[in-house]
Length: 153
Image (cartoon, rainbow, N blue to C red; front, side):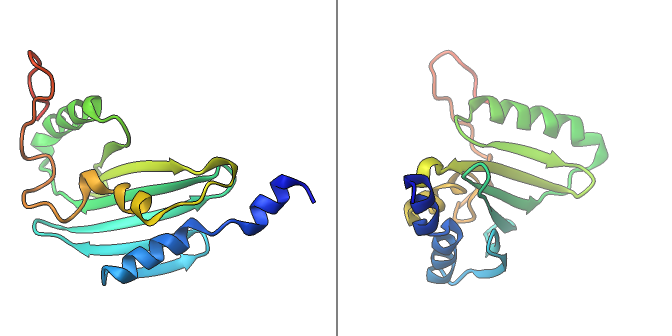
């Protein structure tokens, strides 16, 4: 037996870690398959749908965190520009605005190559920038991180 096949056989499914995290926080969740789990979290400003997908072929745990944000057609260009400015400042992950679905989504992936195991802290940190436990809506407070640069928000 090669080391690669032993690693594949002994690997814990990262979605099992995510499921324990959801259960431990009393979040509503549905495990659609071995490769997908959806978690619903009620936030102060909106509800969040966290969809984790294990993509075994590229050894990555993908997160899509969607929240309802109805944007009037006349403001869509401004929202797109704002999302672009926010994305410029993110080191990991990115925001998307899905116009036809009426949602804003944060997407990120955790690469677990070579048999690396996912920890609860890693799975919890994935949606940290768009997470429901904020006291203000996501992206509502300007933060200037570098002197001389204007805040993106």
